Length: 141
Image (cartoon, rainbow, N blue to C red; front, side, top):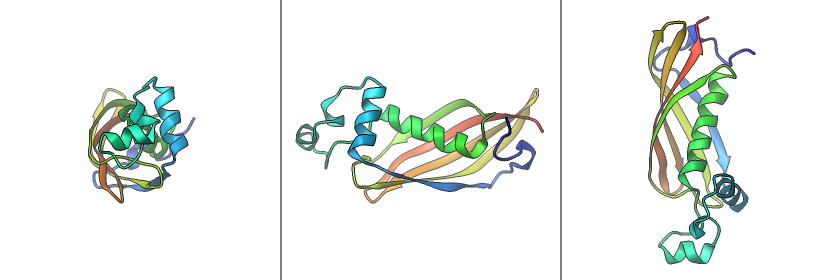
């Protein structure tokens, strides 16, 4: 399989294309079920509002999954995630488009791999939902 971008072309400052995720109740509930997170705030709107949230909201494991998808969709099928470090901010709730943006902030080589650090943000109309870094490796080309 081929990577989406040859690892030799990856440079510090490279901007990743935006990924816009329409957040729906189905996206939130499916992510919670898939990660076995049965906290009512991820499927019961009344409970979530009782906790001070505007509606049900995405759990951190689902956010991590979309962060991984964002970076690996850009990096390609040979990318291996080394680390994901994110901090959650405002909630991702139904009806809010979640926009992912990122930039390459470090590039190095180890053995036969290029090591790439991407700093990213996921924001919606409520503000920053997630910020952080992902480190991926790609084969040297």
